[in-house]
Length: 166
Image (tube, rainbow, N blue to C red; front, side, top):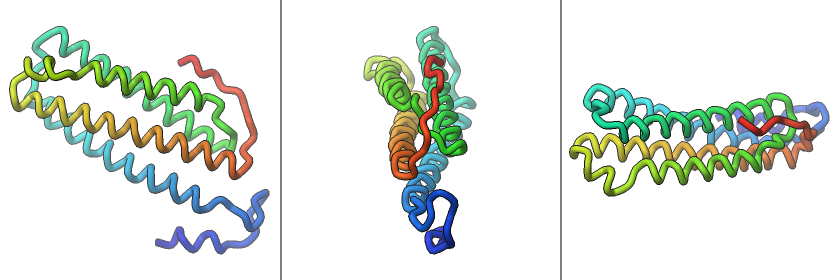
């Protein structure tokens, strides 16, 4: 992996010889793991849409909850990406952490033992694997937020204001 040798590069802007390369490597590793989980989640969605029909209103509500959680994840990833691109601290991180915790709680409510028991066996497996993968995505996004915050602290990113009410 050639990225391990990049830390031996010449003087780099405001960082000088103290470029926080190890932290950027950690972010890259978390992003690779997140991408693998998202690919698995996409495969789960493709497999389950062909076999499972939304029969009841409660399943439609579950789907809408999962879509809302996905929107929160996308918003968080956008905020973190903008923070890294502009080399500015993401002031929405405390709100982001709270939103991700709320999404995790909502996801736990989406699927419960009684709701899975009402679904047929094969469909219950598809729903359970989807929720499991969505929880893994939430875990990785939280880990990514911590890594981005750490890079911002080490690299001395400037603070800027963002609107966290989305």
